[in-house]
Length: 194
Image (cartoon, rainbow, N blue to C red):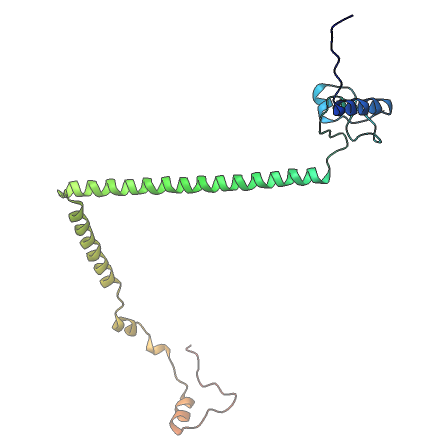
């Protein structure tokens, strides 16, 4: 006699083995295979629709999920929710990247402006940045005043530009205007220049 101790099986293990026997006993070979059986290279999936929604192999291995019957609406909703969450995260990451790219571009431009400013200061012999700012501000103001002066319209020149000879009055109009009468209906008061 051996000194081996026999243990009782856990009730869940007993239930799983009983379910497996039942599935195998009533099994029907399915045309399609579940993703687990495909990944393991099994030729067929055995399914007993009356006993379990999982194939025999998934029951035997105690796999909690078997897609032999396709995806349920809850699973499709979870997949869609996960897809939309990833899409939102991707959009946020792209926005952060665009903001970082814009900041890098702004810093490059600022660096270039400061380099040009430093170069102008050195070429003028100015070592103090405040002095250089003052000189450049005065130059900008002088340029703005010069542009404003050249772009100001001359009121006399616009009046002189009108060709007053193009306006020809109808002789009958002067008679009407002189007498204070209104022009007759259907008559033209202004003739076009020919």
